[in-house]
Image (tube, rainbow, N blue to C red; front, side):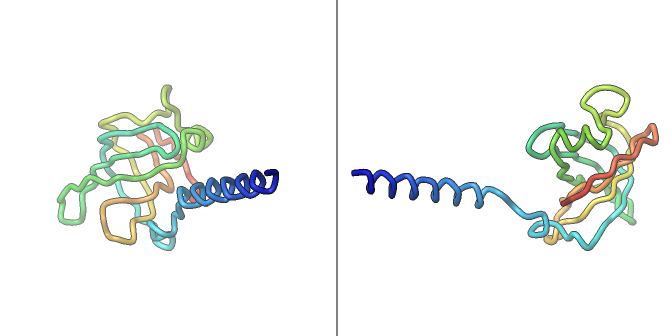
Length: 130
């Protein structure tokens, strides 16, 4: 009986570990980490949440056509450590005009991973994608 129990525990542990590994994802698999774009845009929405925040920014292309970009951010802790807060003077508000740098998606979709942002009060926060 003890051998069966031990085998059962090992199998359950392996299944749990496998599920965790599948849940983790690589930035390099989605975003082009060798390409950094810079743009000025208007904040449409900002989600200061875990495990990843989300910044929706309307950015105009060279022809003047506006496109809504979804930029993934780090966690709320990463944002806070970079100087961005959910409340206070360094918060991101809908309607703010901000400058962002980001790694665009490999697919060409208007999706990216946020590398830095400069707020209207000239506060700049930089994020490391590692």
